[in-house]
Amino acid sequence: MWIEQLWRYPVKSMRGEQLPSATVTGDGIAGDRLIHVRDHRGVLTARTRPGLLGLSATTGRDGEVLVDGRPWNSPEVAAAIERVTGPGAQAVRYAGSERFDVMPLLVATDGGIAALGHDGRRLRPNIVVGGVDGLTERSWPGRTLHIGDVVIGMLKVRSRCVVTTVDPDTGEQNLDVLRRINREFGGQVALDCWVARPGVIRVGDPVEVVDEHLEPPPRGGWIVGAPYAVP
Image 1 (cartoon, rainbow, N blue to C red):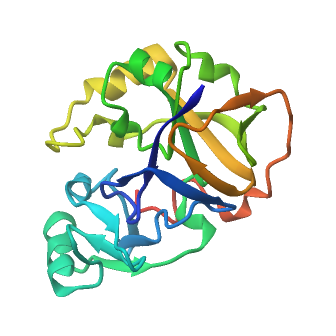
Image 2 (image 1 turned 45 degrees about the vertical axis):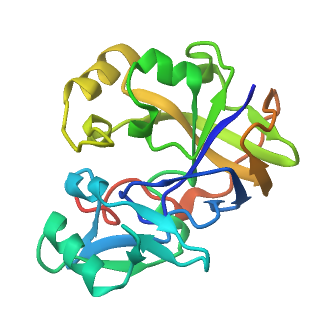
């Protein structure tokens, strides 16, 4: 097995950027989800504001986050965010660990994506592991991934939401995608993961699944749903 793809999402719920290599920290991929969009009620995500997925977030050479090629805190980006989310929404920088919905790293596999039969970007993975047979990933929770010196703990198979129904290119919604995930996959695809040993990983690096049980750090920083996310 090997790393087939690496992804980072500098702005929560916006399109991400594909990477040739990534620094893996205790908070997942360095630079991931450093910016989020919120209004007076709390954080806005693509679950209820799918238009966010039409905006593209990348990281500039200076490390600053860009949205559609403009600085994330520019007036042009502010106007674009309000267009797709509504008046009063704004982008905010925040690096606390609770910026992740569940865990700081999402790992998918080529076998799982092929079984799903849709573009893997719908799953918003950080790491896509190649060379995996079918749904073998579902037997991995409780074990670890070793990628060079990096060790990733696998907690559980990820429950999926309505974001999977949005086409990553056109923005069109197809609710049958989530219906199929619920019907044929028990509502779960890909893996919620955490970082046991940080380091640098690259596309093409060998990946090994090891029968090594490690306890994840306390999950107090990672929350599921409200009050962090607007329902």
